[in-house]
Image (tube, rainbow, N blue to C red; front, side):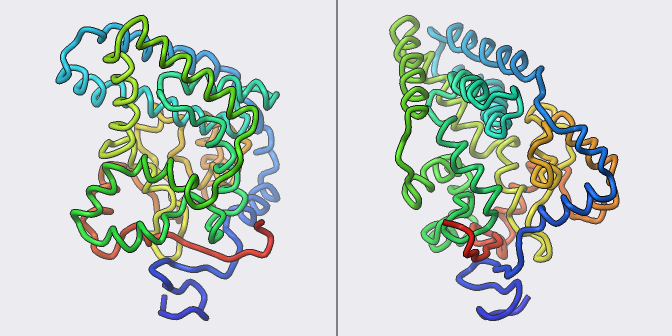
Amino acid sequence: MGKGDDQEGVVAGGFFWSYTDEPHASRRRQILSKYPQIKQLFGPDYSAFFKISGVVLLQLATGVLLKDAGWVKICLVAYFFGSFLNHNLFLAIHELSHNLAFSSPSLNRWLGIFANLPIGVPMSVTFQKYHLEHHRFQGVDGVDMDIPSLTEVHLVKNVVAKTIWVFLQLFFYALRPLFLKPKPPGCWEFVNFSVQIGLDVSMVYFFGWKSLAYLILSTFLGGGMHPMAGHFISEHYVFNPDQETYSYYGPLNYLTWHVGYHNEHHDFPRIPGNKLHLVKEIAPEFYDSLSCYRSWSQVIYMYIMDRTIGPFSRMKRKSSKAQ
């Protein structure tokens, strides 16, 4: 890829730029034309409710059990146990944003609000608004809030800055859209906020601050320098200039609703995570030639240590269709 603003795939303003549509819609059409049986995979995963309920209850119970624990123990349990549970719930909310637990969108929203409880901060409803735009307008400048801001690009330029950015990436991920593209809250945000604050206050009232602190620590420790948080970087950060979405085929998929199958997910967002591996099995020729990962921890290491990689390593595009 060369430099300049008038060439395909150029590096401009620190980012890669594409002047073609995102690759997933066209690949979806090609795959469905050749393998129409993939449509049989569409639809909800009705076991999602039970899986989410189990994780929510386990995490809340852990918070209660730690109400009198020392801070060192709370931090250790939060990092080595609770972080996996809360990140699992964050990715359950991702699954629910595509209405993949029930046929009814409202039931998916209610389950998302329930899954949100151990996370400690209301986010499930707002996440859905921005995430669906990420799918519909992948890489579109000013619309896809998954892409780091220019401020991040200008500040995060060396190993130390990238290390700090990784520790705090969940804050950037959560706050970026609120500053760059705020959306007015609706009634579902109010419900999400009210239910979440009600749970947080109840935890403090009945069990003390340490129980709530454990839940919130589990969220933010699991979203920073943590193996499961590697998916934030692996999904769309450009390590290969010819590819903008990457899949991960490692064991952590079993804890993360198979979000690692990310090319497959963007190609077929109506297929639940537990069936995405079947897409690759049915249509291997569309995926086997793509770059992929086997370790999210290795992705984090490469991101930090490679001087040519940073928040700017994302593909952008302009589109008159985006509002």
